[in-house]
Picture 1: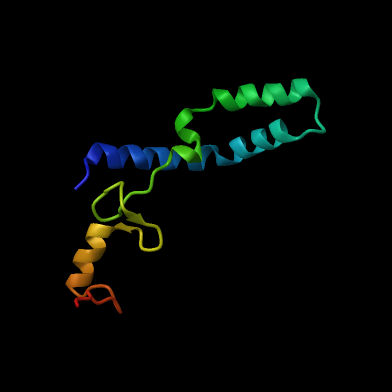
Picture 2: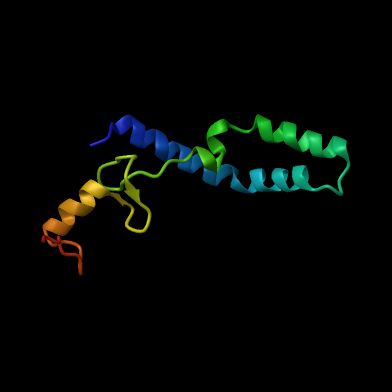
Length: 101
């Protein structure tokens, strides 16, 4: 089980990303538009730098929804490999059987 503080920190980051997504997208669009004057693009970059660091989507990290484990995460199932194996062994994932040979 992951530390509760790390899971809470990740949830806080997700909320910040959602809150600033539209503002960040608008500023990025202005900053990357070559047809705008240099000064306007530079001001957009400065405003983008003023936003909280944790509002950037690249700072998010996927975590297992059951345990909070940050590594060995399957995106499609939203869980770690360990929980996937445990649930499959208990027969709680339909169609998944632990193979042995």
